[in-house]
Structure formats: structure tokens, C-alpha cells
Image (cartoon, rainbow, N blue to C red):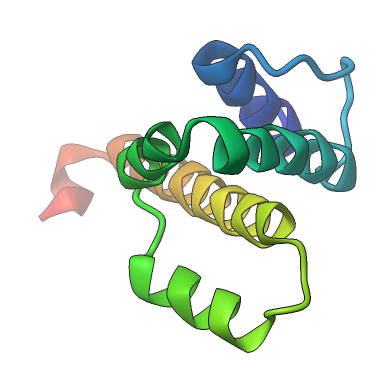
Amino acid sequence: MDQERQIANYLHDQWSIELKDQPTIEEIKEKLSQHISYLINHDFAGLINMLYKIDVSEKKLKSLLKENTDADAGNIIAGLIIERQLQKIKTRQDMKRDDNRSNEDKW
């Protein structure tokens, strides 16, 4: 399964965000940005909880928001969430490769 589909599945499972079968990163970011903008305005505590659960870097988020005061906060946050999800996907793939090595190679 490609990375975009994995992220789309995660967003669907967590927040019922609907995306087409083969979404691009840009399409994912746009839909996620819209959802985040809604949360900023209607459920800020839920947004904070979501960012904590995903493990988005608070330091990086604050820095980006401070540096880009004219930019859409939802778009910035969506980019960080996607970046974090891509990191998790890569880590899982690396761990799976490590698990496929023989026991002798693991030592």
C-alpha cells in the first residue's frame, strides 16, 4: 500500500475524512487542512488532543506558526501531521525489514 493511501486510511479511521481511492499528498493536505481549520474554530481542545496523539512536535509547530503569521494555520498544521505520519510509515517499514533478517544477522 502506498504512503498516500496509508495516510488517507488513517485520516478516515480517526476523523472520518473522506478521500478518493488514490489521493495525492496535496489532496490529503487540503482535506486535512479544512478539518483542522474547523477544529481551530469549533473544538480547539480536540485539535490539541489530536496533535498530542499524533506526536506532532510542539516546538516545530510553534516555530512555524510564529514564522508564518500570514499563512493559514490549518495548512501549516496539516503539513506537520502529514510529515509525522510519513515518518511513522518509514519507521514501520524499517522495522519490518529488520524483522525479516535472520536471527544470526540480528546479533
